[in-house]
Length: 168
Image (tube, rainbow, N blue to C red; front, side, top):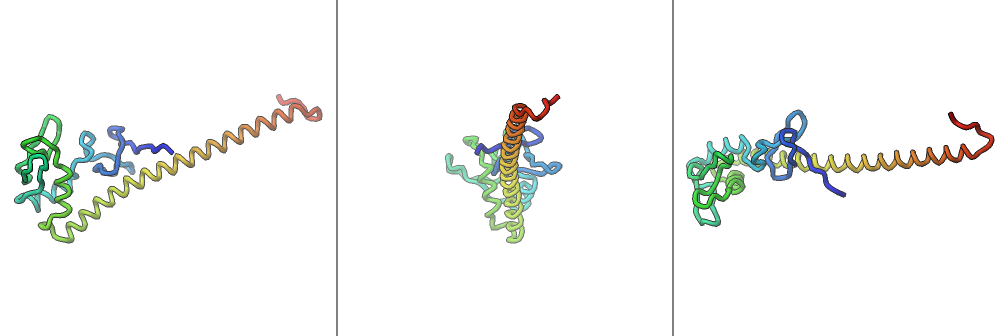
């Protein structure tokens, strides 16, 4: 079965697992359509509150560690959390740090993970519901088509019987 994507109501691009999403009027939407994997406002707030004074990412290509204030930003392209040396996007590494950082109280870390997991579950569940709806629509279309064929077959049979009047 071909999987249909959940379209963001703001940009019409698919909302995929791993994207940062919010609910807008009961529909999933990107937090930032230009950067669907961007950090959420909650994630950024936790990083700046708990992680401003220590290393949050390591660029594997450059073998260097960076704190939040050391990373590069590309304002023209709307990109943040870049390696200042090679410009690689370190957003996922920063996000991974957030959910493992020992500086966050255990309860905060647990709730942050729960929130992220719930958002990802919502994306996955929405896709599954869309797929189920597609299956039900196809089944209904097949049933309508079969009923239509049966109706026309019955009409043809009725026209051949001399004891019934012609329709119309």
